[in-house]
Image 1: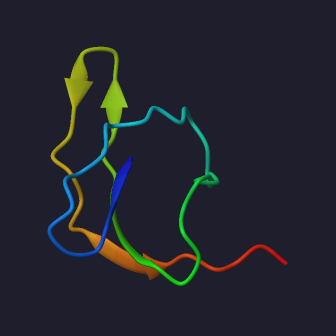
Image 2: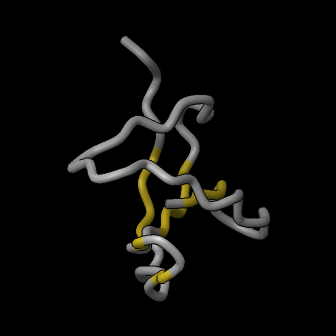
Length: 61
């Protein structure tokens, strides 16, 4: 997966999160919309990235 702040910001690096159903992204700015892409990989094979999905980071409780 990789993410970026919505707009013209560059994409961050691809992160490997392993075989998980969910993950937590840390260091995001509260109330900031982010685009997120995911792709599947196994060894040296990688799928095309998903369509970008937008979500807004929430402040920690």
